[in-house]
Image 1 (cartoon, rainbow, N blue to C red):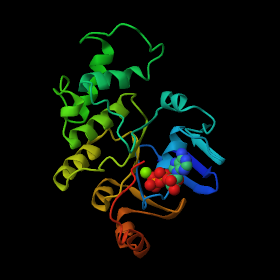
Image 2: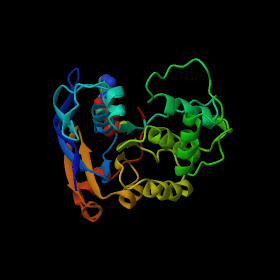
Image 3: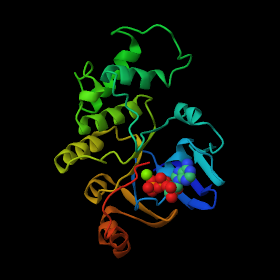
Image 4: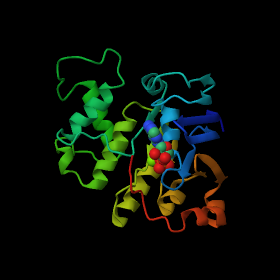
Length: 252
Ligand SMILES: Nc1ncnc2c1ncn2[C@@H]1O[C@H](COP(=O)(O)OP(=O)(O)O)[C@@H](O)[C@H]1O
Ligand SMILES: [Mg+2]
């Protein structure tokens, strides 16, 4: 397996808070790495560091052999790194197709055209093709506000896929889903193109273990465990960290 992402001793500090402490991790082509950890463990901050939404206090990030820790988020998107956010970025007042159009447009060169292109424009077609990957084919004209919670999560994944990423960072894609909606999301995650590397933050252990090739657990900014799904399920450390955990109260 080719290592595509190499994060080395990365740190992020907010004032006196060390949100991410000396995290080192690798991910290979097509790998599904799940990041578990209680609220405030530093998971979303780690994604912000990898995606370029914040710059590290120290440490290195190599993407396909190239140092990227000083590059902007947009440059990293162009290089094939894409992400979804814990708090939805879907525009509720727009149709599904228009949300997709904006997501596709966001990664094009010279992208601030004034004309709104019609149905047959290649970016529109790209939007429709990507919707099909997440089982939302034919939902183009629906207002995003009319989608179910699960469908909105699917749309967010489609928006993150719009840039044809080599790596997808998904921040709690199952958050807020009912138990009945979770198997559908698991099936969708398992059906995504196998050559795309996926790093996913997930609180639901069942969802995580069904999707993961490898699991990493963070606590208080540090990586405290890495292992296979079977090792994770058997780990008393993981169990003790999760005991009494009731959900993400401050989704940020
Ligand atoms: N931009 C920021 N400014 C200040 N503190 C932050 C910022 N982002 C995150 N934090 C803090 O860093 C810690 C880790 O947050 P986060 O990475 O969101 O955790 P998780 O995603 O694991 O729940 C929390 O204490 C949070 O309040
Ligand atoms: Mg988070």
